[in-house]
Amino acid sequence: MTDHESLKRAIHEDVVLHAYNPQWPAIFEAERKRLLGLFPQITAIEHIGSTAVEGLSAKPIIDMMAGVASMETAISLAESLCQSGYTTSVEFNASLTDRQWFMRWANGHRTHHLHVVVHEGAVWQGRLKFRDALRGNGELAAQYLQLKQRVATEHAQDREAYTRAKTAFVQSVVAV
Image (tube, rainbow, N blue to C red; front, side, top):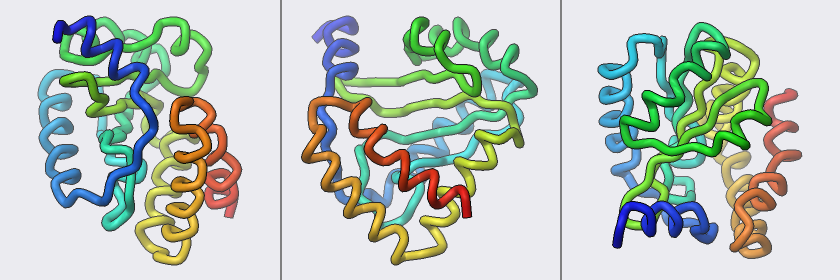
């Protein structure tokens, strides 16, 4: 499979949840160290999303959040991030005001999502609040898993619809 074919498959990959993999934190840590070594503009990198919650089933994609000083810095990193193994959608990123989004892939599968945001800004705070709420409350994590399982079935071939279907739950947790 060529790189182009691999990327195309990864972009159109179905939504499939996998049982928690205890290797996910180590996979995150390796990529965190690699990115921090390449990009001094990045202040901190956090493991977010379901792969950051021990025991929670997830799409096997390591969600990461990189903090930078400003959105101008986030935008300026795009070309270098793409040269370091990530890809992005210029059109999608142009529609975002609070983050820049990047994807890493291998063998036709997404491996990492990287959200570059203002360090300690509203998005940073909200994503960490949600992650920490799931980590600290098993009942809440179980409720989220039930929702994820249902919407993964309903939207198996539409990642954007899958994400939108979880939004109200995430917002209710962050609003508390």
